Amino acid sequence: MSQKTYKIAVLPGDGTGPEVVAEGLKVLHATADKFGFKLDTETFDFGGDRYLATGEVLPENASEEMKKFDAVYLGAIGHPDVKPGILEKGILLKLRFDLDQYINLRPVKLYPGVETPLKDKGPEEIDYVVVRENTGGLYTGIGGFTMKGTQHEVAVQSMVYNRHQVERCIRYAFDYTQKRNKRNTLALCGKTNVLTYAYDLWERVFHEVGKKDYPNIRRDYYHVDATCMWMVKNPEWFDVIVTGNMFGDIITDLGAITQGGMGIAAGGNINPDPGGVSMFEPIGGSAPKYTGMNVINPLAAISSGQMMLEHLGQYDAAEAIEKAIMSVTPKLKSMGAGKMGYSTTEVGDMVAKAV
Image (cartoon, rainbow, N blue to C red; front, side, top):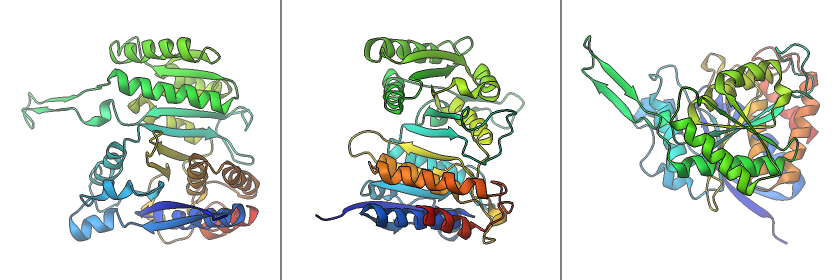
């Protein structure tokens, strides 16, 4: 029987991105060898260096090119010599929108031996997932300026959602909660008392869909400010949280710091539709000040590779990587760059060996 082969587009990106991607690929190839499948990777140089050399953020055909792959594996985007927003909008947001990666999936899970700033909380209490709508809301850039540069300048940016966008995100979140099968509780994070149009739509769809098609899933609602409070005080309350683009962006960083920081937090930009192409990445930035020093933590990149395998249906292989990470985390002094007690490559070697 021939081996299953997955075509993976690799975008190492900027700063320490290539370093963590190298360790992620090391672990992915070790896992593929063990579990009997193959990864056919092709590397693309999208990022700050390319932009500075050519003036081109992303080639015109880049999104179409990505559609030829089974998944995209990303390091980090962000260059100190490029004005903030150019690369992020021109590469990350463009790929998310063009590939209709309408779900941002962010597990918030504390691994053994990892320090959390939350007093008296451990791995038992911090284990939930945030489902963030990823292509709508404030981030679509609907709005503009009038009388820019004058005393009467007006800036408008609109949170726009249609029912289709909201419903497909909420259905994904219910399906994910069902599949996860832990506490079978889905919480909607919104702001119905102030954002009385956008989150009224979210809340109505949430209860309509849940009542009709997912009667076995308990439904909770939290305002975003309360969500932030309970993520700190009682993270054990949460199983899966679903929310819009902006609130999701904020609460996932709060979640990341409770699970040990950006060095260990991974995410997926998911197009769940048949034939859809999804992109997986560590959620920390490019950390340019650590470039080439071999001190950055690669575990977030390795975790994002694990998420990619799970998404591709290689469940046993994904589980093996997660177990390997959990065997390595207690050996590290800290999750921070330069504080692990091991180099970037040593941590990658430890996880690959544990697989």
